[in-house]
Image (cartoon, rainbow, N blue to C red; front, top):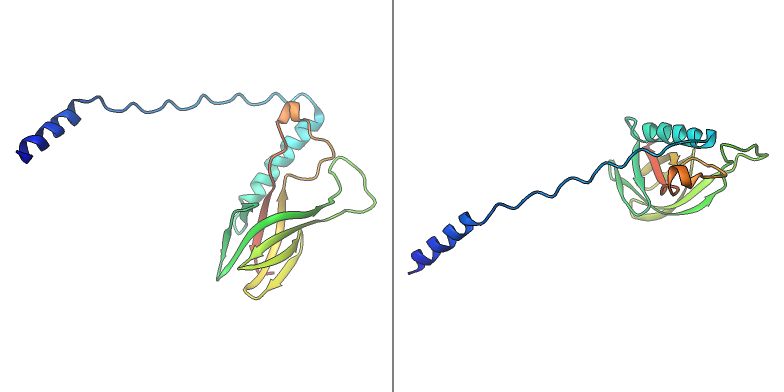
Amino acid sequence: MRTVLFAALLLAACASPAPQPHPAPAPQPAPVIRTELGRQIQADMARLDRELAAPGIYATEIGATIDLGAGLSVRPLSVIEDSRCPSNAQCMWAGRMRILANVSGRQTELTLGETTETQSGAVSFVIASPGPWAEWPSDELGPRPPYRFGFRPGP
């Protein structure tokens, strides 16, 4: 009796139509960049994307952990300060970017362009994206993207 029931279930499964794959979403058209500022920001974002993908750079975002090897890991928690001079402005002070991060289990403040010694080793905070821009043409580029950070182990 079990054999007959199993055979009936097997035949029913074979007779049902195969599930159809979901169609891929249509690609979104590239935004039309009309202003010089929009073109400058787009070029800067492309440059930063290349730098974040460069060999030896470990990229991550707020809330995500990246393993730099040898027991050294970094998880950015929040931006403490982003007073970098906007790329389209002249400033008296270059400003700085500081983040709070969990570095191998300990909360640590990291500053862009500096190397910080920790119990697990040294970590260099080398890249932050997006770059500093006083204005952001969201009608052309959409909303400002979330921060992404690049780190390197050692000095």
